[in-house]
Amino acid sequence: MREPVTLPLRSSEPPAHDHSEADRASLDRARRAARWTGLYLPLSITLAMTVIMLLWLPRMPDPAAVHWGLSGEPNGFDSPWVNALMLPGVGLMLTGISCIQATQLARGRQHTGAPSWASSYRLIPAVVLGSVVLIASIGIGTSWIQLDAGDARDTGSTLGVLVGGGVAAVAVSVLAYFAQPRLQSVAAQGGGAEALSLASTEHAVWVRDVSAARSFVWTVGAAFLLLATMTVLVFFADPVGGWIMAGTLVFVAVVALPMTVFRVRVDGSGLVARSLCGWPTVRVPAADVSTVTVAEVQPFAEYGGWGLRFVPGTTALVLRTGEALIITRRSGRTLVVTVDDAETAAALLSSAASRAAEAQLTQGTDTGGEDC
Image 1: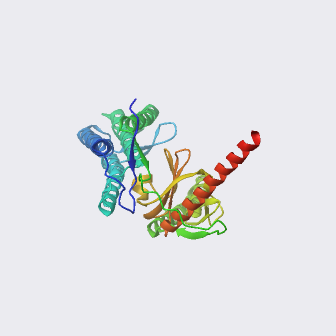
Image 2: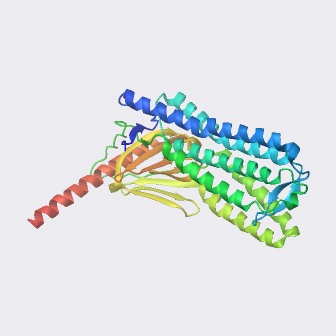
Image 3: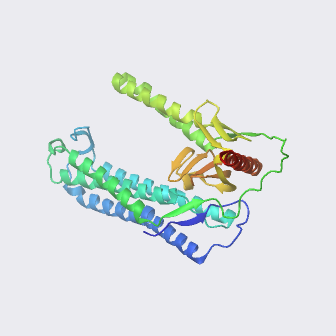
């Protein structure tokens, strides 16, 4: 198997050296593969689904089944046009995720002029393709079952279609992910932050609060209000369903609220980023820091969203677009934290890492001397 190619994240400083033609060629291949995976193939599948469902409309019962219960039996009915228009629309919306990602990536390149790559550039297109396969499986499968039926209630269970579509979606996503070129995203080579000059008796502390982008707050707030309204309405019709909705509402609050404001602290012990709610907390000891750089990041394009994100090889605390600390641990894993004045934080963390390394070296030398 070919070794993964290493490419830099976008850096706020000019790159220390030009990237090789091989790296640029690898990056171009990865971008083409992502476009085919997340854009061209999903659009083709959505178009094929639309054509098939429209051609089958004259053979569909009216009303047609448009919703099915957990057993796969139809329990909702409407015009056959509903699914013929709604499901392709969902397919287009899913494909739009790849378009947003590509747009943000293009804007980032215009801002920095540097080639870049992140793990989610490979992951998001694969998930989009699998999701569109699921939608197409449901649309075509449930329509095929109802062809020439006199009454949609007599068409039987679609459980096999739903399960088969889910299995196909997972399989396609996994295959699409591994079929794309494997690139690693790391901090810009040669672009490490210059350590802050401190005397041996001096200590410094850097603290900043970082808040979620307004768009994120408004989106979460609107979703919370909509969900709360639906919870109240459902309670009147179905108390059991109302309690389920209430549980969902609490879950959204528990997940979203801690992601609105974090306090980031850098001192001689390393970096600590803690939500003002007290949880979650991200820590990087100074002794675990290999390199520190500063880069411009696009949360959705690079990490699939905002908040605390986990992608292969990287943990990202990204609350907004803009400058961020890029910390590479000694294990090779990367931590990304969006925060203002990231250059000062990077300089202080580099100084702390250097001191920790010197202390370990001194301790190792002293221990070695005692053993002798």
